[in-house]
Length: 583
Image 1: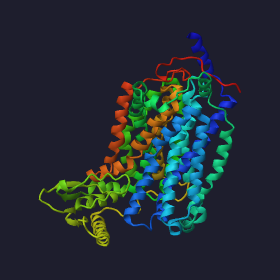
Image 2: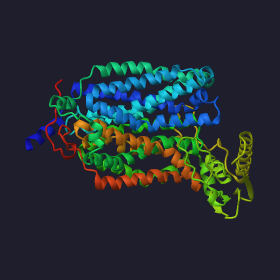
Image 3: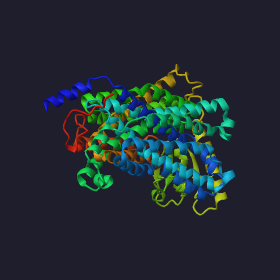
Image 4: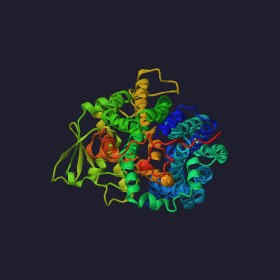
């Protein structure tokens, strides 16, 4: 035992071999490309919707919106099951080589696909199919890359080695923003909206070629090869991973005690912050992207640092510590962000009372993750309009009231009851209400969306003024929280499960956590804001989930940093000399 520990310590201090560097570069580059592809659709969703869905009636558009959402988030766990099983049966290398080819070709074809004006409904159907393929491929990519790198890493350095995989999601987002901004600036807005939006999709074919070439040169994972030679492969990875309680409970605790909190902190720090700046604080798109890009650039080194640190102090203290810090500081940080990004709006929140006068029983909880639901009561119309306008309000209950009014000082604006109205009349009434509400808010002192106090950057290096500098600091701190919870997560998940079912077991909780708990955050936060009238209330979603993860993780998830992942049973493995491939 002592001899084994000495060998493990010796390997932990050895420099990285050429083979290991090659493994990390191949896996990381491919995963950057995967995330780049995936984020392109999200960044250009409005333009793509205009090109492929605008000619259809409202019902058809809603169906496609549902399918597009499913492709982005709900499909990912199924990809984890399909490719996780394949990876445990035939090998890591070939499986995540397949995932990158599917992802890359799907992305390239989106750039070539004619719009609905040329191909009609067939274009929209093909687009949805391509999006589903992207979601399935992404579901299999992460588990393969993380498992492949971890199984090449020596004991004592898995956190550091796999942290390079963790940085790829942020790098993919950064690269997609960079390419979009560059093409947009070079072509101009008119050309970009017409055809230039296709360029970022089309150039991905070059990234695909490079990634496939590099990955095709790689050897199979040494852990999988060793297991195969010993005849210890699982014949039914899905059944063994989730049909046997001893393994299924580990996956469940991994989801609730690690990944669930990691997901909401990750989405809050990168995506909800972007949404909050643009949709709530009314910062223009260029400035928002620049602020996020700088924070990603400054904070992303934390992925590697916290991965390295987790090899020293453990995975749990860093992941759960990041969840706890985020939960304790989100409210003050987002309020500070509001005060810096749009001071006039922040002051209006403090000083201008707005009430919705209504019978509360006529109000809905406006949870609408797919964009397909319609909330047409007067109460829902009033609340949604105020939430979109970033107005803080309270609800005054009048049980005998049939409709709903918005009271702004001495002014009452009556909200329309849109239920059962024909579509043209509904549109006219909505426009009328929005117009009257906006005039009343302006008269009471609420600023215009583009008021002079809103932060504005004119170029990528325009960060020397106080407003953008403070905001970049806040956003960088949010990114550091992301790096704390995300940097060590791959090593923690890999170490929880035995080699024979590792790819399958770790992929599902990861993608359920990130695809569902994280992916549902924007819709849930908006519904919570609309329900309460508090623009910060949506932050309770990540705060409560992060705190739940801290409690469950502390009580139910074991520390794994000293496990030997070549042991037959991940849940009971002890430290043994790691299998280090020769150069």
